[in-house]
Length: 144
Image (cartoon, one colour):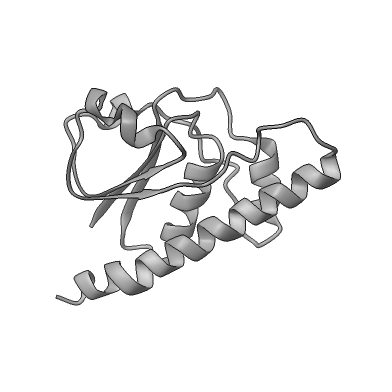
């Protein structure tokens, strides 16, 4: 089963976390992530909060959605606000589309202590949503 996680942003934080969580749930899935405007590097704070729970995303690099154009996926999962509005410009075929909106932990100027807490909250929200998606939707489809 092929799953593409697409975000409007840089594919350096939330989408890489989501990709890692799905891969952790089931290593037989082909899970990819991409951004409409990819960043140059993975968000260091995202690396840090994922390390805290034993998941290493250090080697995951932001990618452009254009790498996947023309591909057909079973599930296209859009993250972040605005992604679903920008989809008409993306030519990726999908069987199912799901939108999961998560706040951007990089927005706002706050202390580092508050910032790490926001990243942890977003990480945990992503994990909960992807666990639900895997256990309630994908598992049923995989056993067919």
